Amino acid sequence: MFAPESNWTYELGLRYAASGWLRRFTVTFDYGKRIMYLEPNANAAEPDRYDRSGLFLLRRGPAIEVAAVAATSPAERAGVLAKDLVRAIDGVAVARHPVAEWRRRLRDSPPGTKVTLTVERGGKRQKIVLTLAELVP
Figure 1: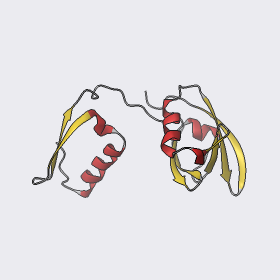
Figure 2: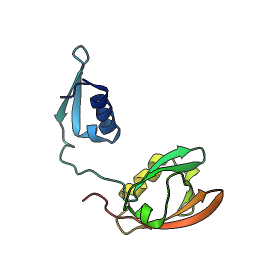
Figure 3: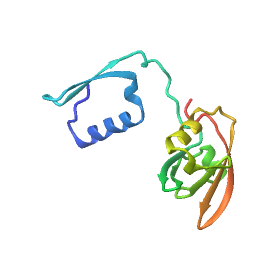
Figure 4: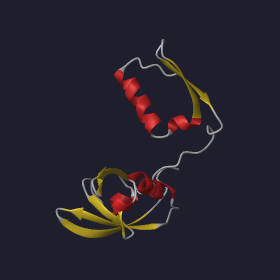
């Protein structure tokens, strides 16, 4: 059961929902009582899949902005910085696909996969190669 008793609880619930956590449950809302019921479904036992690059990416026009880089991640080790603009991944302009597709690729490609990012930093472009790895055991 989830009840939005405070803004913190409500925001936490929204974060979990946005991360795909709710796909594990059949959700029922009692709007009158402001309660959300969660009942485990067939997806409940599936393991979570996490990004293997350590990048948090946001669409910025024809580019993808690096909003954050996880500490000790492949992206950090390769030298990617927050606010870098990714222009291409493995030579393909990021504007050609939705950002969700690029996120899916960084999540679903096997550990050990090398990914070449063309990033713009301070008006200059450079290529950065990172090697995907399991970040969450």
